[in-house]
Amino acid sequence: MKNNKINDEINILIVDDRVENLLVLEGLLESIDCNIIKATSGNEALGLMLEHDIALVLLDVQMPEMDGFETAELMRGNDRTRHVPIIFVTAIYKEKRFIFKGYEIGAVDYLFKPIEPVILKSKVNVFLDLYRQKKLLKEQAQLLEEKLKEVLVLQEANGRLHSLSNLDGLTGIPNRRSFDEYMKRSWRDSIREQQPISIIMIDIDCFKAYNDHYGHIKGDECLIKVAKSLAASVKRPMDFVARYGGEEFVAILPKTDGKGATLVAEDLRKTIQQLAIEHKYSQVIPYITVSLGVATIIPKESYSIEAFIDSADKALYQAKLGGRNRVISSGIK
Image 1 (cartoon, rainbow, N blue to C red):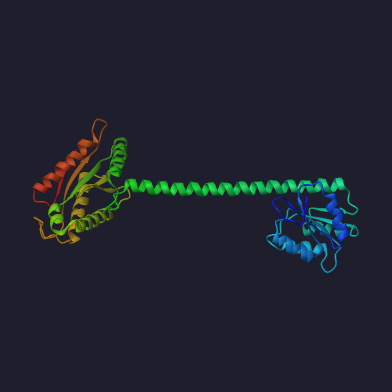
Image 2 (image 1 turned 90 degrees about the vertical axis):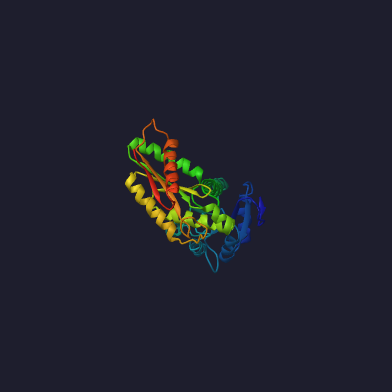
């Protein structure tokens, strides 16, 4: 047991204006593994409680200037000391009205002098055990909170990695891998629901000539503008636009028939032309344009995604052969 020396052990504060009474209490608690902190007044006790973490207060009722009741009331009014258990100790205030007052203020017990050592030690040990359990729960809660923060940080990092792995590094829209995953899910849904699904293959016209004459930096800027415009032009949450590769893009339109997909494709074509990105070396018009191939199907288990995409590619090829800057549909199956 230590005396007014604070370390990692549990601290008990004993308060009495008479030094001999403090020494008696200290002797009674000598066998308990704790620090004994002593105060000879209510003001000194309040100061020590604000300075140290106290597990239990043994508080004399009769003291000059500020008695034990006043000290307890001030303790209950402070957030730091509000929940510290108080055992009142008195040789004089033994009437019921004083006992009741002590409990009303918030005391956990009320002992009379001379104190029976066995009773005192038993009661003190109960509150020290409660303190240890409370401290353990607090430490476990803090550990759990730290682990939760670690998990959240890890989830956030994993989310960023997942986003990076599914987004095109240049344009910021979904990449080919993301397209493949979404295409498989949408294809399965269309088979199950027997709903049409459409895709639009999109290619920037004469893009090699643009790169050759304007340079790759301008070429990248052009790809970014086209990609963001395409992605912003599809309105439904289920619709999906990705960079397919190079200057080629693709749109997936679940639950969309051929007529609806052709209308969407035409809107995309107009949107890109209206960007008015100068292209003096285009064989179409002196601005960036796109050619689009549309394919629509109500798939069955025997059909393949690859053949479906190939039909849209063939439609795109026909659009290029037909003069570019146009939409060609492979028809509804």
